[in-house]
Image (tube, rainbow, N blue to C red; front, side):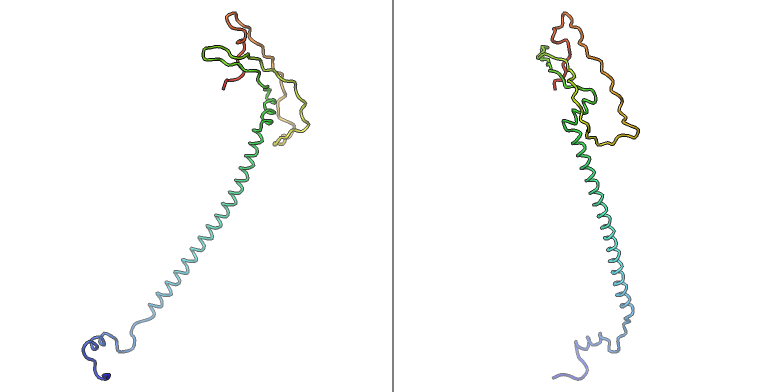
Length: 176
């Protein structure tokens, strides 16, 4: 029961909206738009990939630099640890002419002297080892260390009559 004549009513109105002849729309602008969008997308992907590669190179360079600086920090920390070891401190103090302190005396808040102060005396020099561990190579032309000059002996100041005999010399420690 199909009709083969002119369309009536609603179908006629819809039929007038549809073109009846060959397609008049130009395909060239649409194809050009699609090509431009695809080309722009590919170029932006290429630029993004290049930026990521450049960041990757920079990251690997920074990691290498960090590794070098970490190694240098660890070497410097080992040097500090070696220099602050008790035997190294004692050796450098003796080279500077320092001697171990004598027995200390302390002052109470009321002014009394607690303990008997004694003068620090230089112990007998111990034989030096033939090879000393030194991190710096000697300067060309010989060592630059000044020759040791003898230290004048420390004399005690005379005790005055109103000063007790055990307070004639100053304490050898700061009391800290």
